[in-house]
Length: 202
Image (cartoon, rainbow, N blue to C red; front, side, top):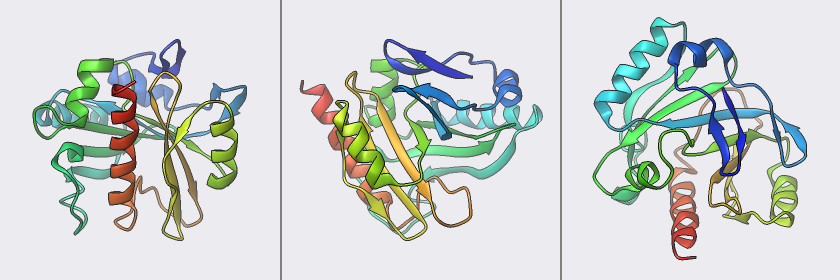
């Protein structure tokens, strides 16, 4: 379903039935086989997101998080308008697919679609055992790294690749499939926006 090209991680298909059937397999990335926790596909708007989620369910995906305005509908936290988004999460035959959509014109996802198009994920999250060790490795190969967040059950960090694509490292010490927590969402959102802003100003 996903693979690598000169831009970084890309979707090999946009066919939703094929996505459910194939799932998200390990990815040969930066010289090693990496487990992928989740990948984020960007739809053009909230209506398209809802349609895609219903189709994914019809093809056999399982809903993990219903469509909602992120993070406002889930957490009592304040984040800039630019990083708010509509999103939902489904479980495929293997791995999690987050479907997201812009919440306002010119916001982060709207800019993502303009810059990268629909075939490049908003980000891919790699499942690692230790985020701190992962940061040391990825920074050594040219990735710009944001601050690590850790709520005791979910440790995460956003990084920007040399081409500007966002890659997340995630380590789960608790059970569950959440792709963020209310304790870390504001810091993660701010870090991602800063990484993207730095890339735009290169």
